[in-house]
Length: 419
Image (cartoon, rainbow, N blue to C red; front, side):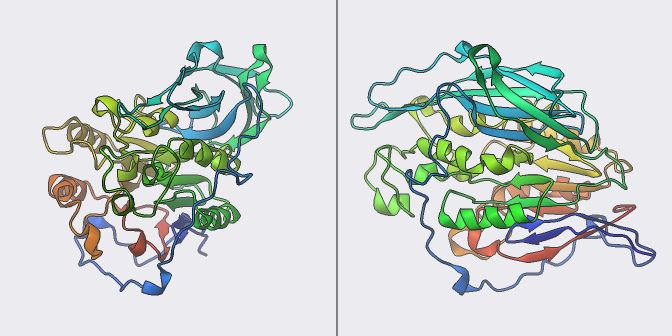
């Protein structure tokens, strides 16, 4: 008898299934490399995306005072730990801004296996980031207070309830919940994983997230290009093509409130389903002092220390019998770079008898026929492809070329995994 759970990807939704296979072993990259198979792009799928306006109730601030908002869950390196993140206080944008004091509000989470007995408590850290432009006429931005708290000692495949905030200030959230990942083993997997890329905050986004939510994933992977805040001027004027509409701007501007809108819109999903993010080109967001990726690195929690990458741009984690590697395409990746050396160590330490499946994620694909991005990631391909092949990476997920990412894929995992 064959037992299986579905693992489907429909417009970036993937469900992972565990199957008992009696014969005809599923091939893996250890049997490759194979000739690539492509299908022509259906031009009828291309349409104009209309952004959600700031007046939409789904992106407006729905709390008062210092009560938490933009609440999210992300994974640590293994099933026994997760991160809880949220924002307190209001952002400021304009010519005269005064950053909030991160130490003015505690970063505390109370949690437990019963919603009526939140007997465990964890504290974390908080920060505020700024997006500054030293040019006349541009508006500066300072965020609300962003909190990150790591919960440890969790049981696998277990439902936990939690509240976050600062009880001493009566600034505490409602009760939310999440489920931990299964224990890592060749017979233990999340039932469904949703993979999304180039998400943004448009009416198309609402359709994608509604579709994703209906499929009840256990984990969300976001392979870059989160909010597209960098398609806006600092005064809030947006465009589908920044360079086409604003060719004379002395610096590529970004409208940071789009990050807050995105966090509010996504909270209903990612306050209970863990989300793991890797950067895309739209997260670069250059500002004063040649700083980049500040919003991305500040707003999400990453298992950087747990996976020993010590970077927000690349890291790894386990989800059941799958080891995920998230790679950075916009930081150094050559053989002398910290990322490459970390990748070598991480791959060498994988135990395929515990996590048979090895999945790699990064933003720009190394193969594709879309003219505007053709061979854009060729240097990264030359640098790391041989290393990934040598360790038998089974699946790669990318974003970036939005018009080539609309597909239906079913993937079944054998109970023994790739051999």
